[in-house]
Image 1 (cartoon, each protein chain N blue to C red):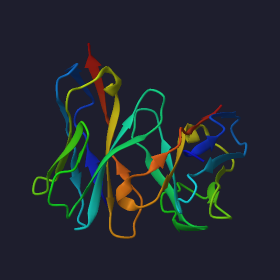
Image 2: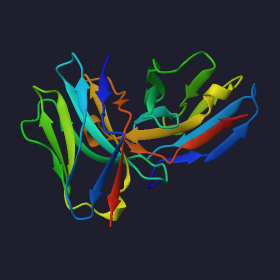
Image 3: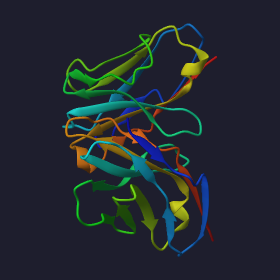
Image 4: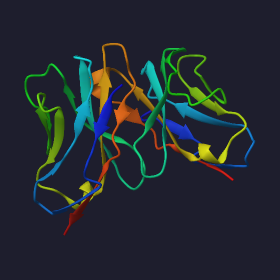
Length: 113
Length: 115
C-alpha cells in the first residue's frame, strides 16, 4: 500500500481482555517496528522485525505482550490480560533503511477501562 | 543506553520567522543517527530529517536543517520561514549501531506558529 496501515484506529476494551492490533507496512519494507506512545510523551520502542523474525524484542514490557509477523509483511501485536496502564497509542512503522527514517502509521489508540 | 533531552516543552514563533528547536543526546556508541519527526494533532509521526554521526555536513531538507554539533552532543532543528501548518509536536530521536534499529525519542517540543 501507499502508507503504513493500522487497524483498528481506536479500541476500547475491558480490563483483563485480550486484544490484537494489526499493522500493514509499506510494500517491500522488510523492517517493521512497534512503538507505544503514552499521553504527553515520545514513542517508546517495543519490538523490531526484520523479515519474519523478531530481531529485537527488548522493549516489550512483560510477557503479556507478544508480536508476530508470520509472512514477513503484516504484523499483529497481541496483548493478553490487558491492564489500565496499557492504555496508549500503539504506533507501527516500516523502513527501507536506517538513514531514510521510518514511515509511521496513524496508530491504534487503545483504551482499557 | 541512549538518551535524548528536549528542554523546550513549548515554543512560539511568528509566521515567516525562523525557529530553532533544541535537542541534546547522550550515547557511548560512535556510530549513531539522529532523526527529527513532526507529529501534528492528527497523531501521525512524519519523518523530517536525518543526520548520521559520521556525516561531515549538516543535513538539510527544504525548510528544515539540522544544526549538528558533535562535540556538544546537540542536534538542533532549524525551521526557516515558519508556516501555520508547522504547528505541531516535534520529536528528536537517536538510533545507534550498525544493526540496532530501535529509536529512543525525546519528550518533544510543542511548536505554535502565530499568524
